[in-house]
Image (cartoon, rainbow, N blue to C red):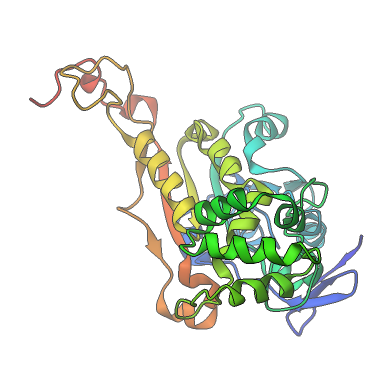
Length: 343
C-alpha cells in the first residue's frame, strides 16, 4: 500500500483516496506541556498522521529523536512520507502503545523518554476512509479495526453476540441508556439478514428510538462502544498506565488527550495514584505501604480546547488534556513514608 504527501489543497491520500488533512487537537498546549528541548528523545505513542510528531522533531532540532508508534498500518505509511525529511532522527513502529516499554528498550538503552504524547482520538484519515467503517456519515463496511490484522470486526460482534452481551457492551463502552432496545432491534434484524454496513447499523439505532444529544448523531454512542470493544481500547490504555511513569526520565512529561469519560477516568485515576504520597487504605492509622510520589500534575484537573479551536476543528470539543511530570528521586519527600497519618 502506498502513500503520498499532502497536496497544496490540504488533502492527502493512500491508494488514491483523498481526505482532509488531520488537525492535531490542542497542538500548542501539548507542545508547551512537553517542554521540548534540542537533542531530547520523545515518543508519539499514537502517531496518526504525524501532526504532533512533525512539530516535536522541528522543535527538538538539532539532534532530537522521536519514536512514533501506531497499530494502524495506513498511519505508518502516511507518516513515513511526512517525516522522511528528518532521516534517522525518527523511527516508526507498527505496534500498540500498550507495548511501549519493550519498544523503548529496543530504541534506547536508557528505556526512558524526555516526553511522551498519547492522543486517544481517531484521525481524520480513519474517519474519512469509508472502508474502515469508523464513521456513520458515509456508507462503508462495518469494520472499525484500527489494526486490520486483528480478528473480529464490528460486524462480527454485531452479528454474533447474544442480545444480552450486545446490550451490555453498548451500555458499558458507549454509556448508552437505550442499549437494550438497540440490541433487541439488532438481533431482530440479523435474523433476516446479516448487518454488514455502517448505514445499516445507524438505521437500526435510529429505529430503536434513540434520541440524539445536541450536536451528536443518535448512533454516536453505539459506534463508540463497538469501536472500543473491537480494538480493546480500554485494555490497551490500562496496559500503558500500568506503571507508565517508569517510561519517563526525571523531569520528563506525559501528556494524554482523551475524548470520553471512560478513557479520562482511567487516566485521571492513574495520575492520581502516581502522585499520591500514600496508598494505604483510608482507615489505616499508619502508612506502611512504602509508596512515594512518582509524578506531579502539571496543572489541576484537565485542560479543554479553546472556543476558537473548537470552532475551527469541531473534533476538539470533547478533548481533555492531562499532563504529569516525573519527579526526580531526590525531590520525593521520604519523610511521609512510614509516618503517622493525619489523625
